[in-house]
Length: 326
Length: 94
Image (cartoon, rainbow over all chains, first blue to last red; front, side, top):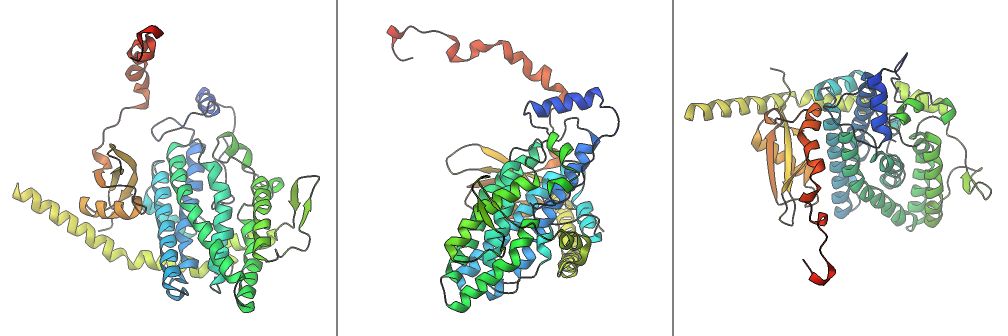
């Protein structure tokens, strides 16, 4: 998931009649719309979750943007450009959804830049070879899809509509990644080795995308009652492993987990949990690329200020001229 | 001069002669740029043949609390639907 460890603002104390009526609407499957009454905790939790999701889409452009100028063919370059442009679009859909909750776009940016809001831990890992473009599309977008598909049914209308739009486009991202992996895995021994290396490096960070294990996930209950979280972290992680292992086998690549084994009794794969110390460390800002990613965002924001202001000035002038001509 | 670009609501007409439909919103300094941005944000896959943009501040919406008075009266007027009337089979297609 693109949003990890979102702190849920459960109401403390007694539920008011309004709280109960609100929960009843959600239980009936009604969508909550921007102007409807909602508990303050619901609003705040959603701003945090949708905001973090939006930030992840935007920061997520950076690891792939790194390879646009070095794509191996013109076709691959066009495809990668289209994919990165989609991520920008997904960020914009989500920022708009967050803004309906009464937060401004600039406030969200400021909170990202100051570190008050997070983005997904996965984007703090470097993209070292072209095969990483394959691994990201296949694994990272694959993991995102696992989470986003159920979120299409989330209780908040604008969030749900953004997710529906995003899911329509996300499948292209995963398939283009897998297509790169097929090409690399079927290529020269060196190319296959690069594909294996990319899988080795992105496997556990991808598993971390779903967030900590359910037993350590303290915010789930309230968010699930509000239907802004639909499945538990462990459910989704298991589903991801079950779907991905056969895809790796098809590629002739080995998942870097010696304890990975099909458990016929459970009907699922048993697998090794990622190193959660590393996860919390990356989240705290100590991943290999945290500084570089956030630095790039802040630089883009600051370098673009004159342009944003220039367009505003032009718009005001043009409006004044139109008024004078009337 | 630090201020956010205003918010615009975007409406797209799809390929098959349907109404313009609300697809989402975006920030832009003026209407012309809003159309340019809408093209990039909402029609990357040929979703439309025409774009309308309206500044969000210019939209007047009904209040959620008016839902009852506005829409409940239609509830007991089922005769507005053709299926309310039983037409005998012998009459044929109607």
